[in-house]
Length: 400
Image (cartoon, rainbow, N blue to C red; front, side):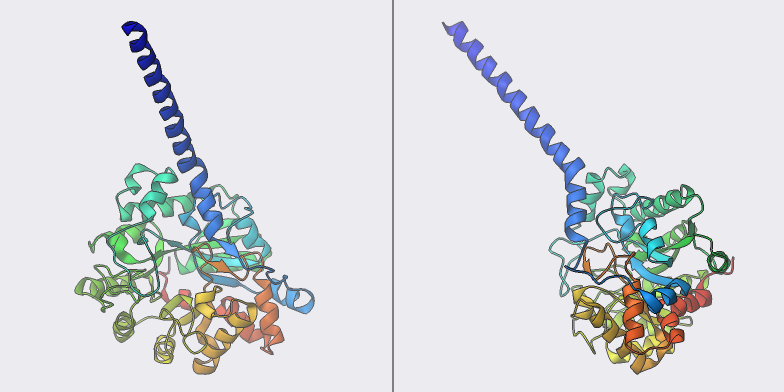
């Protein structure tokens, strides 16, 4: 009888272990196969009832434009950019539908838990869990530098498999060749690499050269927290450039990398503008004159960026423009124009940046139509939609 009892206990343990194994297997399946895609779809959305693409004269005008967007976080997600997706904001086919000449793709390497616009510490990180869940190379799990290098490799692979439809832009020559090909009617778009927060330097000045060699041609000192380079407008201290940060900004200008002050603290913006010798950009966001969130630019900062020859790139989500509509975007654009002139405003969607936007990359012609309806000339619309950004890139990128 005792033996039968022991057998029942053993059998019970076997059943329990099998059940535990099934639960663990299901958990792993959900974590690796379901959760990353679900999260991507959950955070990268469009507003309800997005505007229709342009038609008539506005559509004809849009086809003649060179459209440039200075910020998208699409490389963060486990997607094939050569395949049209039913979610998110950017892929090559949708870029072609929207007549996008050039998309700047940002490398996001760290995001604090409890992320907010007011005050964040750099002591935690959500991207590590995402990197593991997406089965990225193990080298990216514990290194911010390796995450950026991996993002550059991803974009290179997409370009290599695109049959020439996607070109990586690293030099002025690359940019000119892209625009010449498009003027001849060739179906080609460009991708340029950027960095959202130089914490991926891991505190080492020499890592900037590694990022440049990987193809990065734009970078912002900070993202949502203070780092070894500078203070963030969303950080704890919100200080300015550190001694390392000043060396980095000088070296970026020497190499031919665009300096981006999106997410920078007000002191960091002031420090960058005081030392800049090339155009500075604000790659994505808004202006306090139409939307007084803490991450948006003051009039003084707008004028300061314009004085360098740079651009303020208006985003498409609520915290950037407050009124998440085409009219809200146009209002911010016109505010910058009225303050500094037409040459200093550009587009910076923040597509795929865990935001809900007015339209995706296939629907940007709705903005062309709205600008035309607002009474802007075709020449001014061409500057806003891409001409100003192209001017800044030509003034900054290495010749090649």
